[in-house]
Image 1 (cartoon, rainbow over the protein chains, first blue to last red):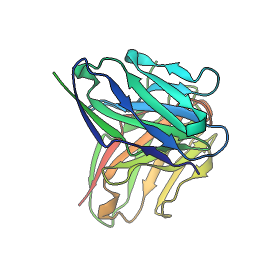
Image 2: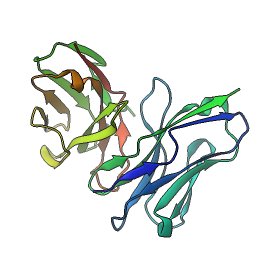
Image 3: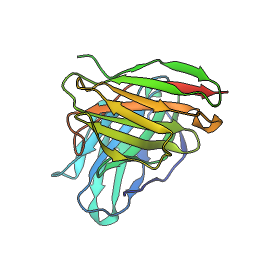
Image 4: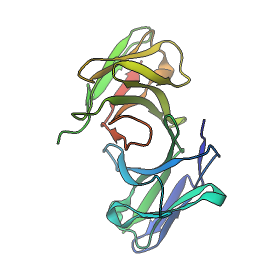
Length: 110
Length: 113
């Protein structure tokens, strides 16, 4: 089974700062990769996903992620965050089930 | 289209009791997965049902069980509740699991006292 490691537990940023969240997964052959976001009081929503093809994937709300196969990484980025990006972010890998990382809480200060 | 609906949203139960949680997937989705979310353990996979059959199971004791009906609605049951079962239980539906995108419900917050 896959394991997923997220590098940061809590990130605090100011508005307009750039965001990068690290995610590494254990090797398991072909993988499907996801980033989910959970805004306060809301359900988990898909930000973006990678199945195959271009390793740089773009998602909603200006987020993007880069799949680097040699590093088993799938890092999430956003060039300029907004206060509304305050949320918990989860990296996930799908083999026969979604395996989630521990999550990173992102706090954006106005 | 309607999203994944979980009922009830909140539950308070006493140790030793049992509880049943319900999940209605997005119309047309045949796969339903259940997850437990706690501050200490994060999101952990419980089980997945596809076309009324349990297809995958996580590492939870037998007190946790589920089923899926012919309309793809799913229920999860926890018997002999323990304090440690207090958690947010999330249901996710997809067309068929695997590489399909999973859509999550808002969860049922279970508190065991």
